[in-house]
Amino acid sequence: MPDDVPLRRRNIVVIGGSAGAFPAVQELLAGLPPDLNAALFFVQHMKPDGRTRLDQLLDASAEITVCAAADGKPISTGEMRTACPDRHLVLTSRGMELVHGPKENHCRPAIDPLFRSAAAQYQTRVIAVLLSGYLSDGVSGLNAVRRCGGLTMVQDPQDAQVPDMPLSALEHHSPDYTGSATRLAELIVELAGQPAPEPKPVPRDIEMEVRMSLGSGLSIGNEQQLGELSPYACPDCGGNLWQMDDVILRYRCHVGHAFTGDTLAEVQGERLDAALWTALRGLRERAQLLRRLERETQEGRGGATRFENSAAELEEQADVLTRFILSRQQAEGAGAGGGLDTDYGERARAKEDIDR
Image 1 (tube, rainbow, N blue to C red):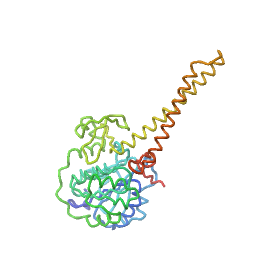
Image 2 (cartoon, one colour):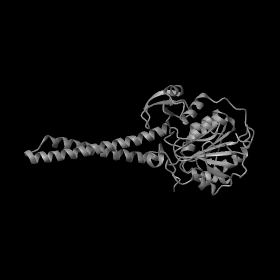
Image 3 (tube, rainbow, N blue to C red):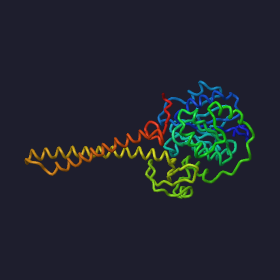
Image 4 (tube, helix red, strand yellow):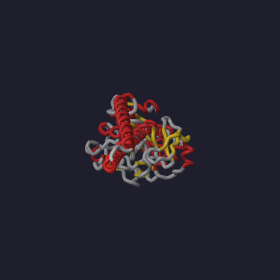
């Protein structure tokens, strides 16, 4: 650990957000002085092939230094490090690490691995901040920070462009502080560098999940220790999902993929849509082939054949399935504002594309 990060001070600030978090973190950075006595880390959901540098966009309007996280680099105060595409940002005894570990909430980078690893490594020195975004990524991480003695902050839902994540945090977690992005910056300045309480023992389940994020400690036996076997399959790999014992409904498979309940429902919806469209394509293609066989048979022998009835049945089934798919999408679209965000491809994962 570098000498400029004194021990037993609240000097590790981890920040997470998704859709709508970019302007919020800009506002937060505007309120932080260049000599802030803390090291900051920021994860925002992004596309795995994102090309524009998030750190460069933020550094242009910030007083403190903002740069991309670098694998194996030590931690220094007075700067913010940002996550990179397709890598989890985690904090370990080596400093910061970028790992291609299992996706969490269908994202890499995800918020929970950063929060959870900071809690396990730095316990009472951590301040975790959750900003705007869809669904519930970050809520479990906030709880891990709390359990290890750190402080938690959540953006006021009324101040957030997308209030889902802050609302979920308020429902399941009860943060130490809630406020606008500007107010959260003031709190960070006030709290950064203050003495931290004595470290707490890190709960074993948090240590295990940190190892999973790093790609180690993955086994069926470990997942059995973290929860109970559920009837659901992992949408990413097809393995069994275990229901976790956490403040929010959450699942994890034995290769490490993790989902909150609402994220799992969204991904299942996407997979179901794909399966329905595939089934519709199969029905229409087979009906078309049977029609062609019917025509060729008529030309060779004259009269109708067995293919005609089969093709007609398939066409009728395809029409029924088409109406079902369209009615299902209309129903989900009408209900999207009142519950789960059902437009998974564009919104539910909220992979904020920094390449605007």
